[in-house]
Image 1 (tube, helix red, strand yellow):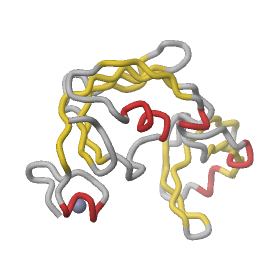
Image 2: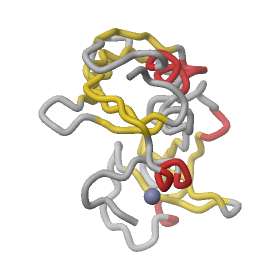
Image 3: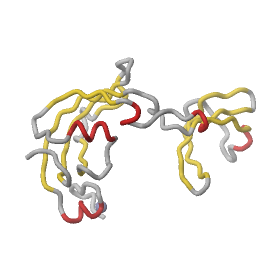
Image 4: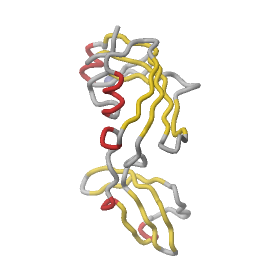
Length: 159
Ligand code: ZN
């Protein structure tokens, strides 16, 4: 069975950046499952999976526009340390969930200078060209509930 809209596919992946550093991998864990055509993956990866079947392996390099988008320097700002209420230790690399104009976003602390803290609300992989090594392990039809929810139901992940 080939990967097509509304089918569920499982795959192993290793994700590398342009410096060939491994950022993430499913090796040693369960393969990742998703329902095709429901925007569960970055567009460039989902497009590359289309038409593949169990046993297929491939490598795909995805431009930022088809991955996590370009960086937006307007999402970088410097705020006073005292705005981090109730947090004693702030370190570069820490991530916080904030709410701004009703939208949840994740910010990463990128620099600390005295009492000034620089935070970046870009996705950590924004602006990165990403390479995935992929091995498809299973393709199956989705259930009605999976199509309605737009995500995969496996074993005890019922809701
Ligand atoms: Zn569900």
